[in-house]
Length: 278
Image 1 (tube, helix red, strand yellow):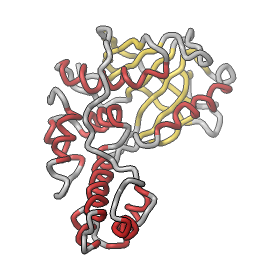
Image 2 (cartoon, helix red, strand yellow; image 1 turned 120 degrees about the vertical axis):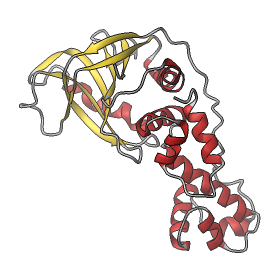
Image 3 (cartoon, one colour; image 1 turned 30 degrees about the vertical axis):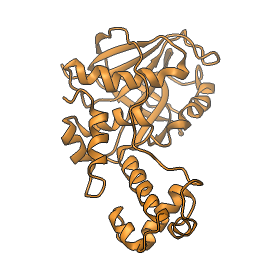
């Protein structure tokens, strides 16, 4: 396993921006699974792998246009777009301006370029994880699909879920779960803010649910405020896991919030359960 999968992925992307790139190819280069790369890259950058590729290609295209590139179609093709129209749509979505406008103005000072990611986020100190054989757990709650570009909506999902706590048929205790599951190849994943239930038979119609299988986990305690959990997740995926010798299992990973967790203050027992192969 690559000891720095995100750094290796960024290097590979930056040295292959002008050619064909796929998630499978990048993951193969850094010797991790596509799922591992998606989670690690998202934790490090806030972007999915291919969103980063797209943003970097459009940034370099913007620089070429501002420098007076004579042929917009040629710039589009070099950026991976087969037509002027597709390139213009993607360019406008990224920067809020058309390629022709940037070429005409001759500078990029008024658009937000995406520079090569430099791995500037610091690792945080982790306690040694404990290892547990997790039991089968049925979790139900509110769920939405996100990408690493759009997961800022997760705290609002929790706000919507909190009023249900204590009023769900078959609820087991008051600990809550933030489950990341059903990831697809593009980096889209489902996040369920929920709690344990005895069965799925009497749930509100708007609820999503998942059966977490019996699985071995590395369990990490997050000691800080909930707002800093991203740094802990970043360190787990980009430092601990690549250096641990363990392989990621094909099972949901999740945040566990103990019954003492206070959603108003953001403090209390928080754990991150990472599925690993035995």
